[in-house]
Length: 503
Image (cartoon, rainbow, N blue to C red):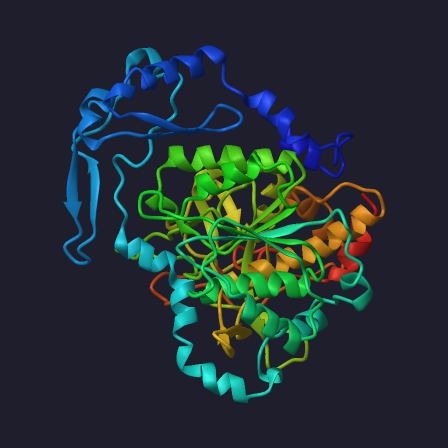
């Protein structure tokens, strides 16, 4: 169904489903739901509490005393300590189990067996580390002119974002950034940023907690640039507390968004994990929710990561990142300004890209990847899964962005910057379609691969650079057409907006 409503050549293109219709389609049998709930509630007197059940009845959150784990899941929860960090977590002493009569109804139980991996978290949070490494430049950036950095005006110039395009938001439009790991934005910094770069204000709606006394560079970056490019469009800041097995609560976030009737049309997410650090069952369950949002006309963008192709400990395999490797999201890589040529870009060497080990290559990208494989001087196929989903799909500038943080201006790098920028471009195109009485873009990947990528001038093809990152593993080189470094390249918003009216 996702492909049917997203295929620009199909008869059902743009005929999106409501969230209620989707819930009706995917809701599990009542006997499954009632059976599992009855089993859990039989332990209520012992302290088990069903704290939340999703609207579609396909996701249940349960609080229970750790001492009851043997009765519930056939395992004992014991404390494990990370000897380096001192972090202590409760985990099962063996593989958990569920009663046989419910095993066909339960996909998995989270937070029981997997450990937060501090090394993977450090790699996953590389974009945040890169942001913090610029703290010494804050005062320097405050004194220097904005012409030395990427600013909203530079992005508009590079990507042909005209004033007529950016100043005509639809009243039915909306966009959002998701925030994790206690990253909060500061309203004062946002106002300072808007004022300095003459950005038309957007109405901001906060879902969750936003502690403005503890502003984070990531959160400030996301909200500042999605509102700078998607000017005047109502914007949500969706703050997600807590951790799932030591990492971002992606499932909790996306379930929340798929249950919210007025959930924004475009969602920008600048976070990610090493694909192998989460269970495949969990990734597939999150994928179900991505598909739901796509069928309802929403677009989800994820940063492709800031570790290039990644490299395992033996330096003989690439390490993909997720959810940027999901086939149901738009994966965004990063470029940098080529100072040797006006309005020219090259690949950022740390831009995440490669092939998934969890998800097979979707049909919409077969032809594009086949063309890439016809090139010379590619890494040996032993480094990556040739049948996996290739990512990223597209890119935008991601180096030397100027943001307002704690009352000063500082430069930052990362696909964390390119993602909200491209999200803002898609929000502008949504306004064009909505103003013309058309549907939103929704799951935009088939449209990009089948239509937009074949129109001269729709994207700037990036043909220089590679994503080897630290050089431990040979990265992928940029080539004409699609490549797993910058995708199809960076957008020409004016051309894409005109093309959007033809489907």
